[in-house]
Length: 231
Image 1 (spheres, rainbow, N blue to C red):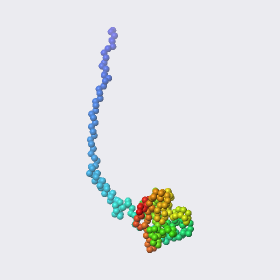
Image 2: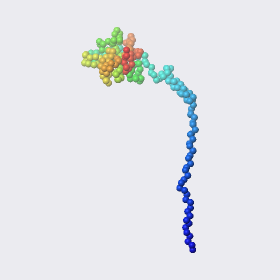
Image 3: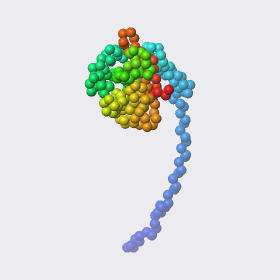
Image 4: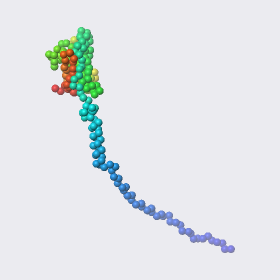
């Protein structure tokens, strides 16, 4: 029997080369979206919101921004002269004379402490024979001074004190932070940074007294807290 020879024919071998991938069509830009709200309606909304806020800012006083801007007091009763002078007389012949805090009172004017701590003031009975240069003829106010206590150096709060040895020094308003000192009689700086830098005197509180001896602050401070008197 004849032996079959293997066939020498080869089947077609698929080509290893592949067809290039078809290039996808370029992405087309997404359709533009229109604004969610027109410019006209946006402006109408802004105007309406502003109107509502303006109406809300009118307080019971009828003033615009009344609740946000406090109204300053025009007058404020501080202390009775008999009380202030009594505090002085109680220590006049004692060592407490050289601690004028013993015959001084702090008060806020023309705004209260909720507005700013810098509207704190002090009224003091001047030790004899000192006289207030603004009231040399008034039988009560010649013995009284009142100043805003905000130091014009870096805005610490000053206190009544005494510089020097008892009997040979000076009554002053003294800053506990950096050592500035002001004469108690007129608030002029005489020591420390406020003096060295040539800064302004402390603002004064305008005072009046009625027939019953009630001492009252009135008007505006003669200067600005932390800045001082410029005139």
